[in-house]
Image (cartoon, rainbow, N blue to C red; front, side, top):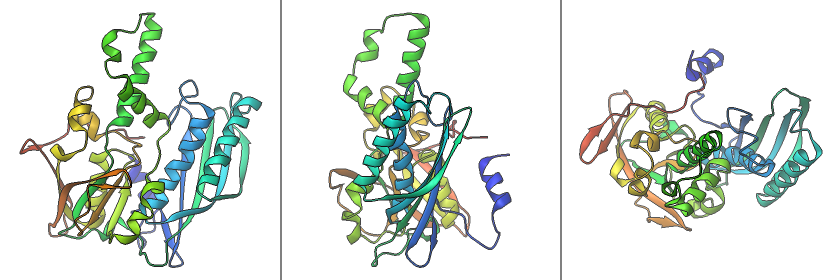
Length: 319
């Protein structure tokens, strides 16, 4: 069974489970996310600091994609023989506390247990500002402009560079010069993959003055996530791929399908009827499409160079 089908087995048919956060008591939010060794990170690639920051950021991104700010959390630690070592868990704890402090968030409890592999779960509680309604995927409206923060593709490029380095090491071949033709981009991409950061800290305040109807963060790739938005809102979304920021730069190293399926970007895909500036607090805000009604039938169309484009690869799926 696919992930969505498994989720539906547990869902109450009378309640919506469309968003990454649960909204309750008017202005309260809660989300949870897990990182599992071998699926979300590798200990030989990621430092304890990388993993601690990633665990917090993927949850903060969920809270912000509903319009909120993080307040307090619960941490579950499944520690393996390697991650329970003093040096590893000490480095992890320091980075974890520092990042929580940066966001003014408190750790109030959790659980710790022995595990064959490292398994980490954070449950994060957030709060909406008094003047903001929750941003839910089903609140996207026909006529809305579809916006994207930042760019998509960096995480996938970082993953490819790390895999390529593994292959070179295994084959005992020297790094070819062509692999280093854009070292600053590759460094940015590897950091984006190992230590993704939400746009919360840069955009929470600027977005206070913008009427946003719906939002979600890019965690499964633009292709999959735009379909989730269309299904939740029962709308037709048309996305112009040529408008994607840094597209030509990324196409030097990735296929278009790889860019569309790049996950854990933690950028926001959101909709609004307002015409927004192209940059807010140093973050690119790009109009990439529009929404229209389709008689309750969800639909997403991608246009590339004025032609319909159908990706052949839909992105990573757990099952």
